Length: 235
Image 1 (cartoon, rainbow, N blue to C red):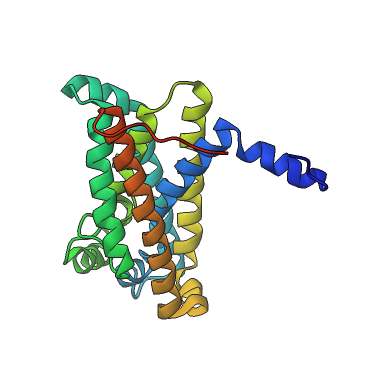
Image 2 (image 1 turned 90 degrees about the vertical axis):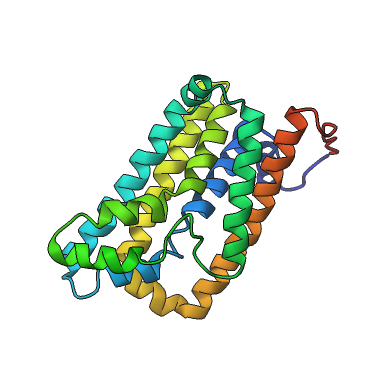
């Protein structure tokens, strides 16, 4: 196919490279599962009444915790599979089911119980007031780095066959953690700009895309297990 615009041709070539496709899958699945926008109400409740500097520290600790937890599971994911005798296809199916449940909750614009258990916010708010590290638990884990995000990075890590794929995963985790810090650090401004309705719409859109990713994980797992025939892609 001939492109009149050279930039369009370059973009098309980029989109067809395995690196671009894998990186796009990694950033979308990780970012949608961490979903810092959905954590804004809980973060504001946790840091209610504290000074701006302490709120920034809490957001930073949450983002750093998210990065450390997800990166750790990405690096040791294959060893965990080997240790417990878990195959990647089986984990893809299980991970797809977890992602599906989270995505369905997000379609209703609510936090999944896997990301935030009832009472976590109130308990964290009391911890923040008493000087305990609410930025690590429950903000960093499980609100940001929850079971869904951990499952996603482990599935992605299980597909790694080259160094650049692992670099892409860690880079996507770092980018997600950085954006999470920016969003939470400016939580009051973000909520004022988007409004409660805007945040709900954004969460629903992310939920819809997450459901699609969950089904793709599920299909990949069933295909690798030989339950369904391999997908045929057409150009």
